[in-house]
Amino acid sequence: MRVWLEGGELVGRVGGVTSGHDVRAGIAAGVMTVRLGGFTQGVDARLEFTPDQVTGRYGRFTDGLDVTLRHYAGEVRGRLGSFTRGVNVQLDLGAVPFPLGALLSVCALRLWLAQDRPLTPAR
Picture: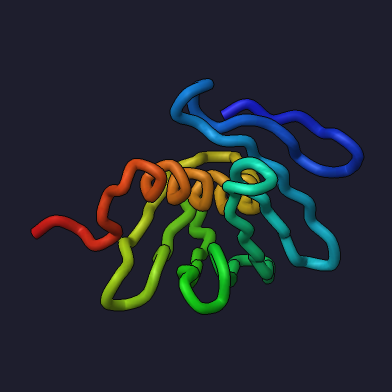
């Protein structure tokens, strides 16, 4: 992942030229709005922050996925998707700020789904 500040937003690219996607993220009043991918083929995410938790939605209301993440002493833990169609996530990020960890989680979800991989864990 490579990002930089541009006009008060994080802008950059996740992954390679052929298998990656663009990312644009801005935070205002405790809400992060994220665009993953291009103008026509991209997905939006909206994440609402409290000091130690983020809740939100990846994608549209009808076919999107829930995002619930918490910050535990350098780790970002939580769930991407619903109880029946989702996966638990845990990222050990050390001193990385929680909003950046949440952004990394949503970017990883986009890469996973772009490869047509199932969201439910293998048994």
